[in-house]
Length: 333
Image (cartoon, rainbow, N blue to C red; front, side, top):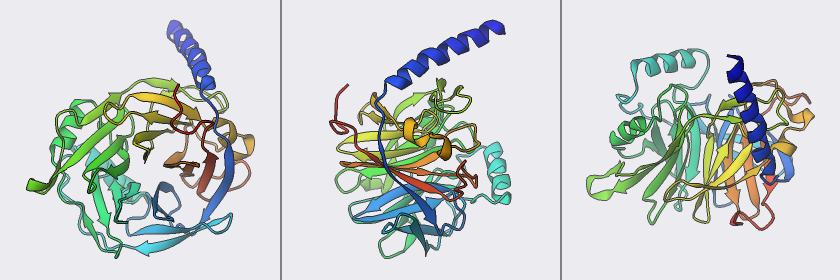
């Protein structure tokens, strides 16, 4: 037992050296968000110049963000959500855990990701059902076409989607005519899954190789995190910029660039230095960032404070703006 602790300690020290080597992003601004009924900001999307967000506590609304002041205002847009799709892909244990989570005040659908297509339609990811709700620019909503059961089958064969509340955490849509969707699986294991539209059958299918990557194991929290230790690797959101995928590595306080075809991690940037100054720290065991957008000028990172209050007394959800790294997001290693 003592040997295990020694080995873990050595790994933590060595891995911390790797974390420290990742370039640090510079925070430009910080924006508390007022007006979210359930708090718990869990995703960000940009449609044109408009920013949108969601809460994993609210099943009947999404939020339009008024960003004209330092404190942002969330304006609720009510949505009429049809009955949830067939949940045969979930185990009995997952169904039970989701039921009890909803009794405790969590949204039954557990909205965890939001993205936008070129037609300014929004797509909202339900972690509970691993399903996607389409909200059109006119406000109509429907569960998004049909997703082949192979998505869950192949994901589970790769070790993903094994635990309730550790399923898909984010999505992006791309391709000519919006024909491809990438989904980020959260933890135990974490990974990337790609589904594609098969127009002839009017469904989204999981082809050979649709599980682009899957990995498990432990990684260190940054040294700035109080009581830094080894924790499960996780992803909490995904963004697309300039034909690259960017994953929000929540517990490591990093944004990592991944190659689209293979999911290979190419480079990471840390945001720990500014995010973990003493005044911004929560009494939490894990990172709390849950939303990511990347553009040429920088990155937006949203914090799901989970009703917690920071050391400085701030108890609202937060969105941070970080400057793009020197040399841009395309910089090589």
